[in-house]
Length: 182
View 1 (cartoon, rainbow, N blue to C red):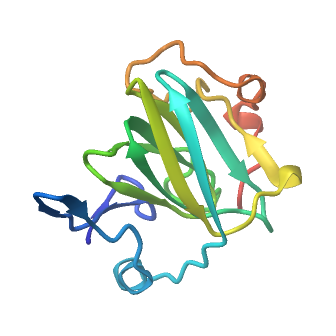
View 2 (cartoon, helix red, strand yellow):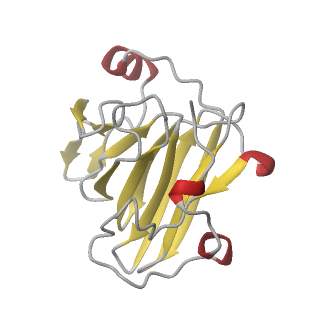
């Protein structure tokens, strides 16, 4: 597996080694030893999530506060998305910065997003299926959202200006008012 840095040190792109033949392909989407050796952390994944979205659907920017904060290992199994992580760690040198990566069923890239980040994505293809592992369980009371179009974050959602968002996401908090991590 190839591990690449992003412009936020703790957020990593993982590219599995894919084996193709006339039957199709095979790859390890997760290997605990490789993950530990490459990233120097031991994740304890407790939940897998799967969503399906139509073109221009934007989900996010979501996060959970401690003690229910979640690290996420995300990937696309059908279609293509533009995936975004925003650093909400006040003590970080990249606090308030974001990183965006195109994830697709074709490129098979995955993104590791540690605790302390808000996360969201927008569907670029006609539809996309998105799956991710989390290091903590969903907890409605600790769930928070930041506006996808927050003027301080200035996220460029791959040029899409009018995405389809949920009612919950349309009522999200501005970054400057958001509860953050120390």
